Image (tube, rainbow, N blue to C red; front, side, top):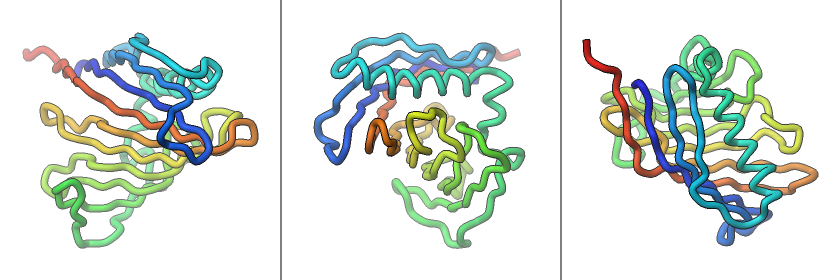
Length: 191
């Protein structure tokens, strides 16, 4: 994949209210293999402080992680993780037979997770990831518990929904939900 564009909608919820977001932002994300991710805000509402402390922090972390030289350290590969099959029996998830693997990072990094991944038993594509970041990306929050769902877009597994829950002394319990829509995939030119 040479790159992609997608619209990402971020909604931040506080304490136990996951109905009324305290801050929202929709961005157009452009990913290029040679430069990483860039973001253009399309709309925003709610608390500027929360958007800055939470959403901008997530976008900055994603931007850093997507840069060449950093992104390889976040891939779900044996170079970054110890992986073990949870059970030999496939589990049904989103209408797909999936193998479940436990993920244990080989080092602490805000780009790696302790958790599990569901992989389609037929095509080996990622269906779901659940886990806790091995290191918090910010001193303002504790490590986030993350779940992310994927769907095949032009044969490539791409995120469709994510949910992260973190707690901190300053911000309390914070939930971030991200929805991804309108992928446009750019494939490398054929030789």
